[in-house]
Length: 296
Image 1 (tube, rainbow, N blue to C red):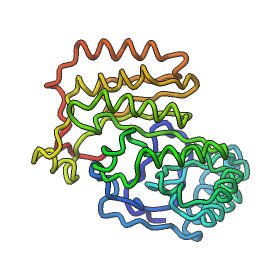
Image 2 (image 1 turned 120 degrees about the horizontal axis):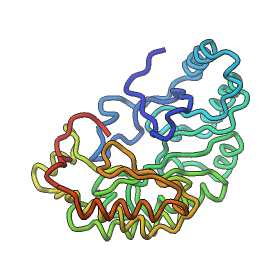
Image 3 (image 1 turned 30 degrees about the vertical axis):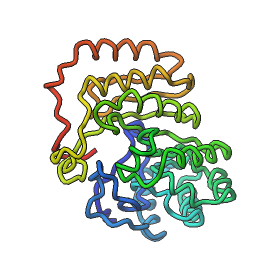
Image 4 (image 1 turned 120 degrees about the vertical axis):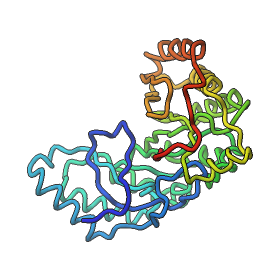
């Protein structure tokens, strides 16, 4: 039961059972990311998955019957063909018969490669709460970051998910466009989110880690990052323009200088007030987002 690489999962899934399905990232070329460097993308075989399931079952025994949600580990397990995912869903339910939701990270191009019939079958099998790396709503910024898809394509694919009742939780990143484009980015990203209607928005702040292309581009001044005040203004304008009352907004990532979260219809004004105070008092000399050690 060896797993190659670090196991990552969304912070809000801290108490969800984790099951390895893939290793690495099917894209692994985003300029800002070093999470899966030197980890080739690989699908774990059914035998390997069942070995993990057996060990989990042996450790937890009858408590397994209480498990209703499981999170599939990997950068984007949704890259697997629908047939492969459905085979793994059947195996999961052999050991966890009451699982209702199978969640995971996903990319926009994972969705585009699946037919409407595939999405319907995956929804029926419990695949839901996909965590999508949306990042921002500007096509040129996503192209510059080598994300591998555009905001327009993300909109198209998320609307397909919505049609089949598959919830998506959107991962966004402040500061993606660099200096002097924060307001533009905030408005474009809010427009996109209002159109695609995620159940959750998870926000972090772009930082350059050692060994990434982004870090090298900052050193050579090919990319000029936004300062902390501009990043907070971007966040505030983004939040102001969101029209998603039932959506959960989460910005409590270790990379976020101000930590806020809540359901928008209940907590939006409180969060905006906190951001306004931070904008007035921020000391930009306290923050270094260049050549950081570690990972996202």
